[in-house]
View (tube, rainbow, N blue to C red):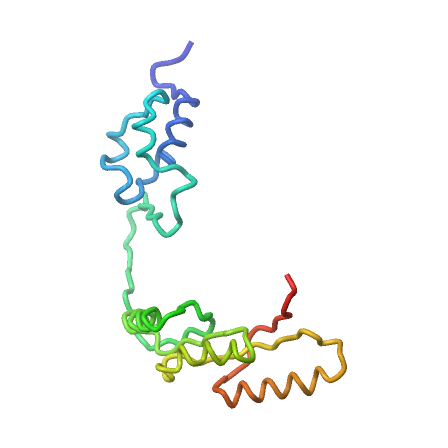
Length: 183
């Protein structure tokens, strides 16, 4: 016999799965209009109501904003006190507009310079360098080291020659090594 305050585990788990969050977390912003305390479990037979609720498969980490249950002071730092250098990034921005937005974000948070590890050589490095060259004081480009054919005759001198070429093209360092065609 079930007590009045005892939780029906199966109903709770079905409800939590449909809602897509645990009972103690706040819902994803905009996903559910009422606070969790006022929400009523969705009956499985009411599929139109269930379709509107998020599921664990659709909630993204970028949308997850938990509320702390602890009442402690919180210090939010919008911008670094001193200029900082981001020592590890990759050429995520593909267009001039995306690079411009990246620079604006750097200005907002206090990043003076970002080191881009292109992990590329040859024309691939040249193309990446060309995209970021509008902001030479904001982005420092590092080329990669292609280890393909490392066990063949003449690899060493050819690799050095390519590194020197990348340096002449604008590389300021060597980042990650790669082997083309390897998984």
